[in-house]
Amino acid sequence: MAGRGETVAVLGAGGTMGRPMARNLARAGCAVRAWNRSREKAAPLADAGVELAATPSEAAAGAGVLLTMLSDGDAVLSVAGDALPQLSRDAVWIQASTVGEAATERCIALARERGVAFVDAPVLGTRQPAEEGTLVVLAAAADELRARVQPLFDAVGSRTVWVGEAGAATRLKLVVNAWVLAVVEAGAETVALAEGLGLDPQLFLDAIAGGGLDLPYLRAKAAMMAAREFPPSFKLSLAAKDAALVEQAAQRHGLELPLLGTLRARLAEGAVAHGDEDLSATYRTSAPA
Ligand SMILES: NC(=O)c1ccc[n+]([C@@H]2O[C@H](COP(=O)([O-])OP(=O)(O)OC[C@H]3O[C@@H](n4cnc5c(N)ncnc54)[C@H](OP(=O)(O)O)[C@@H]3O)[C@@H](O)[C@H]2O)c1
Image (cartoon, rainbow, N blue to C red; front, side, top):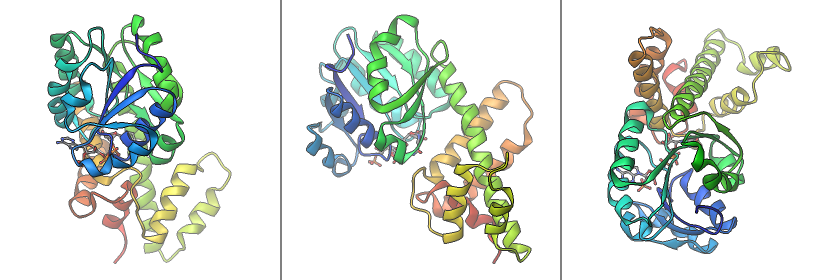
């Protein structure tokens, strides 16, 4: 039975999201075993009583819950392949990385093959909400799994949105990220346009202040663009990955949404040189010389 007394293996525990999630699970009373490819990035978790593992299999040995929080589908599938056979009987795999529809289907098939219950659980929120334990968890799984994993979601998030069978949460995540990516790219081009027209971009923010078009997220990203400093909360390389996943989903479902192709190309272009900077560094591609 999963819950706060459960042993949770966290793979990707040195990442922007994985590390604070592991820490919050430990704070909530879970016995957490953490693995990260670059071991030193997970090392600070030892202070929170987290046990560091040398391999995914070591982290998973006898654990009741596996949490994956890695960059993309290939990374998730490769580590999960090693970890799943080591879990306890009756274990559950919570897959929280953003991997898109096709990779989620592969995860579901792998879990079924290994006899492990699967929860599709991508999250909304970035570095700070992850640290504060206020992520929004988008969760999809068989009904009987909900009570088992809810205490873990409550440890990392402030809200869970249940959306049906595994796969549905990933689809909802793609929908939300289509919006997030469009807002940031539109914000970047609007700031660049203001500058190109000889206007202080702050005038744009002042003009929309308090109205229906004002957004705290736009303000936060525009401030980074104005300062030309992009410490990563959500890396541009991951945003480019997500834009491609969103476009693939639209194509799979026979939708013609041309903005998605533009977004995918624009974010991929910025990610070549600035992939480790924040998503808002897409502004660099549009900024006037
Ligand atoms: N940051 C956000 O705002 C945010 C919000 C919601 C969802 N997400 C999603 O959550 C996931 C993690 O994001 P993040 O921001 O935490 O990314 P991150 O800081 O770049 O961390 C990525 C993690 O994946 C590991 N990794 C990458 N490739 C690997 C491979 N081939 N084998 C093993 N491990 C590998 C990294 O290990 P190393 O440390 O060794 O590189 C690291 O632990 C992504 O799918 C992202 O799209 C991010």
